Picture 1 (spheres, rainbow, N blue to C red):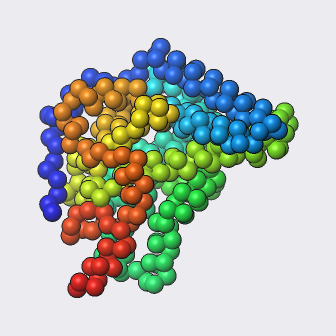
Picture 2: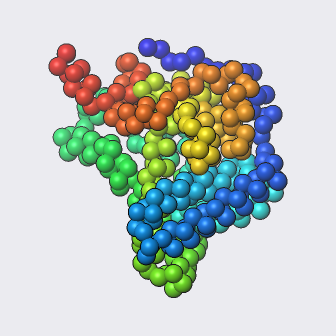
Picture 3: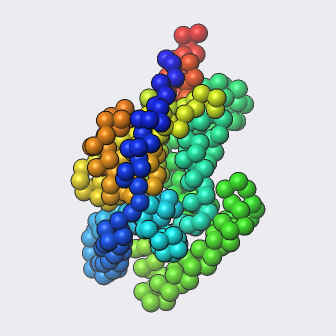
Length: 339
């Protein structure tokens, strides 16, 4: 297979510019309604805790969905697409970052690097799921292969992956490309705010509620978030290219999936399933993504997947540079036998 034909700027720059920038009233309504429903859902979970455990477990699902929706608002703030006022936008981003256990400024920098390098084989490592090529995997030691296989297993990705989002991303002790002094300070300010919020909850509603209501809901939201991020770029026909061949628009549209969800799930996930539109136009607010896709044929180039496709994609683990597609370990074994 050959590298996908590059999409010229003339086919997308004008399209993107028409939809950029947030609608203040619509954004404020989305923010207010989402946070109100999140507080209500958490309150109902706490109320049900001593009455019906199954009801508490059932309420964890919509609560997790609302946490994801809150995260998408933070995500839009990181791109400057949510509100037209930069300082207010950053304040909302910080607050929603605290509510979703995410250090806003550091995450914004890391996520910007992800957008600038997604699908580039020579610039991996920023906000992506670690992915090796077949050649890189085969060159590893037995231990290196074992650790990579372990990391790519669905149990580790979805079971331990949330720990990266909830815990590890806020343990910053040194500067790097994604973490300058401003981001470093923000990480620890976020940590202080989260610790204060948890202490307040523990003092007012008790540690039991924190452990049995808030933590499970946030963990479920984080696990769902890991899966969402995984399927956005990890599918069989995904786009990967060496830096000299890499093209931003082609990577955005053909290297990002269009996850087709029902209206309820699309609402909870803030339309992020239209990831191909978002990657091409990151300053387009979440509530316009479907409209942009529907009105512009260039987005029909994106690879569409369903929920079931997304579950099946968890078996994919390696980029086959010869076939230019993602393959599972099982297929690599077949290739070895055929040699």
